[in-house]
Image (cartoon, rainbow, N blue to C red; front, top):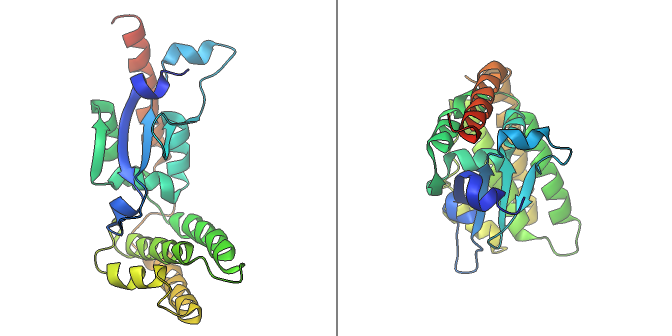
Length: 225
């Protein structure tokens, strides 16, 4: 199992602040990846893990099936990997996965992004002193969701909002103003979820067909075909 990430990764990229265009000198380098476990390993009693940490610090990788399941739910952290410009590993299967992005996108993003940011906002504002970094990332995530639902395009690079977001992170913006910004974004997202260009649900059949093809190719490779 220890070789899954090192030998079977098909896609890996830097995500987080570096991918969002919000990195500072203190920012960590966060990496996310996808590995494809050999097909025959699923016939064992001990199945391959659905995710693994490492070997680099701040690195998390998902097995391709688990990754696809999360992406179909519009998990924000998973979708980031499909559009990050800081790609470090991309095999032909990894390139196919990134090209599959439109099949994952749907109006489900309105719910998944709202849930993710609601948790983050609660944690960020429950302490006597707000956790400004989490407040900033909550706003950032909502701006990404608004763009996605309004235009149908997933764009995680926050060039236009960089100065405003970094001001939030440094505590220069009053919490009340941050919450007002969040509520405006939520209202815009709600409208876009009703009238935007994305389909109601993702293209499950297309994703499933691709995943089956990956498993078949893995089996062929195991047998030297």
